[in-house]
Image (cartoon, rainbow, N blue to C red; front, side):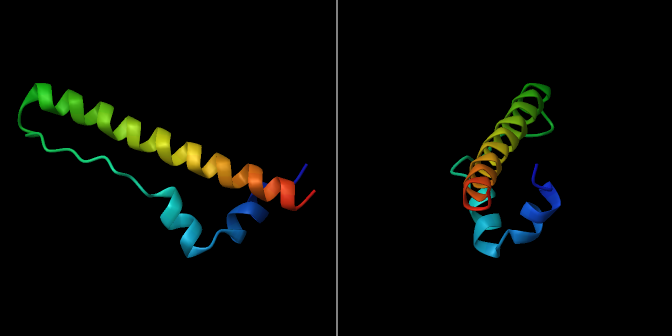
Length: 66
């Protein structure tokens, strides 16, 4: 199995920008407990999207480096 560290070291700035891309935005008031709960869900959604894009790039990398 390939070493994940090799994949991480192969990431370019463009790859990292792609991983961090998001159309989502939060406009709540963090002093409001209900908005704070929404914000926590929002952060979870951002992280889920980032992990999917990272996984996508990892699988592409694995196919290119058998």
